[in-house]
Image (cartoon, each protein chain N blue to C red):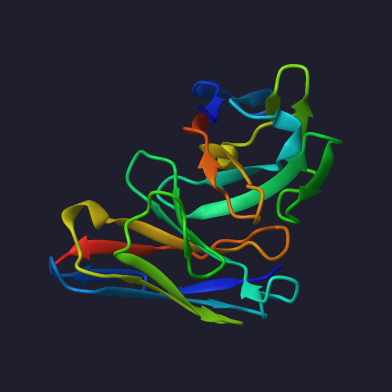
Length: 119
Length: 113
């Protein structure tokens, strides 16, 4: 069964660093783009960026460029979203999601990781 | 970035009736190679990740009920839910999958009247 399983909820303080993960299974990890999507509490969906694990080609939304780092580890079939210095405004649920063979819609989603940043 | 504008923000429809949600892109998202528009629809229920309903403006994803249909081309699109059921209560999002970043609309909250 193809699936994306994300790491668990995190509670951090402002200024701390964080890396959350999205582990793929049931398919060839390097063959499909994976994206990250932010959902602020009670708000809509925002595309943050995407990565092609086959060559680590990455495309960031302008709103998130320089704010986060997206990476992938082929050896563990895991994609990552990382912050070097969290802000309270990063409090949100983060989803990873995968494209498919025939279009760039997000056909498969992880369950989401809730990140809370509070002093 | 391509801006996606959904309407209405919320919608209340009686069970068994039809619900219609609109989405407009700030530029054409017609793929010349596919001759189809790169528009997806998702639903999201509370506490769950989004679920893809439709891509290419009108192609239902695997396992999606035929009560859901998409239409439109270029910049104007519509999601129609026929014969509304209680399980259709959700927030619906459109997204352009034409060019990165693959931007979403702000969502339409669908409720039962």
